[in-house]
Length: 309
Ligand SMILES: [Zn+2]
View (cartoon, rainbow, N blue to C red):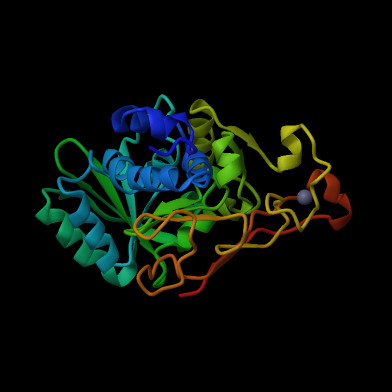
């Protein structure tokens, strides 16, 4: 027995270790896994099997088959389900699942969902611009299997991940692909802190549905602010337009602030192979703010999000 890997893996049964993992965010698990090889193996196995099964399993009868469909159709799961995968310890569970698909794959994804017992309850409703929040998607088809709902959300263009960088809060800028989990703000999200994404604003204001979403996440225990400097504490290390948490910094999906966890190949590895075509898409975004506390001299900075097709 390896006694250098801490009490959790070396002394506890697999069942107890996995139960404790259920209270940790993916960020905590990645950090713990980096402490010893045995922890790495145990925690990686937990994320790619039990955590994945617990998160997706309530919605589909066969998780590997569902992941295979996600891979085939270059689609991702985002929204509440992806956040719940990141941090399942809250006192809420996702009510429905959001699948983001490229427009040309929508029919095939719907056909797959029919094969696993879902039927369309509302087809292709167009999202009015005032309620889209500039979100980079234009239609939502809701399917139901009698107990669970899945929203199939069509992204504009070929990149299913395009809408994610326009989501209303940093805490929901996450997605699960067939092979990986991506989180744009793992440290903030672990601390249940979230920054507004002004890319989601319409004419400089949050839409009514965006405000509803703010309320939902505040009720789930998240503290919402415009800038990390507004959370209080030590902001000495904050460098406007440089710090990865600053809303004026231009971020990209391969920078050091992001966490990409391969659910197959290994923890905390950035994937550059073609095996994960979704994650390999290049994205850049800026949350935007009128004045980050230490950055007044820069004045207003617009938000943007861009994903290469
Ligand atoms: Zn700043």
